[in-house]
Length: 167
Image (cartoon, rainbow, N blue to C red; front, side, top):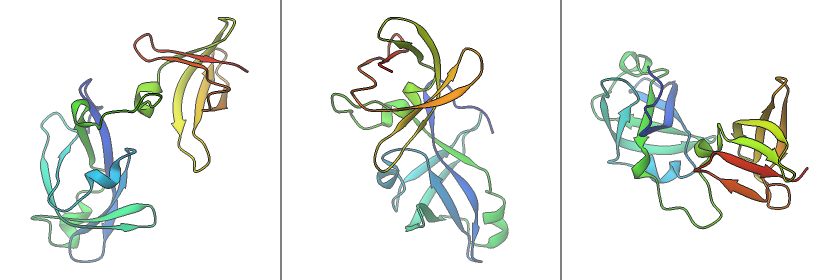
């Protein structure tokens, strides 16, 4: 498995086999995962030579998806898929509304205060029911979370990879 190229982003990965008929448990990694993991959808693996899998059936299960793929019909074939990561091209993402950002675009952004003092960089985005949080690694290696709300994050410039926080 390789890291996604600049034009690809992770969409999900196979956690494990489920049952004896070739089903797998897939963890979606996109905000619109429910629109991607549907019957008839084609998923590409995130490898140098991507493989294509067609979803023949899917259902939600404890925050994940139980997926059946065309051509995967037994437990052994499903077990062989454990850890396989799926990716999409960035161009396949839905259009964002004003004030929305993709979490993967926030990761790597430099974080500065409203006074311009460097804080660190975003290393992860935690999606929560009440609010999302930016995980920021400071220059000394410590990490902390910043609630991703307008009052605390008044400025975002994705092109410049810069986020302004008011702490």
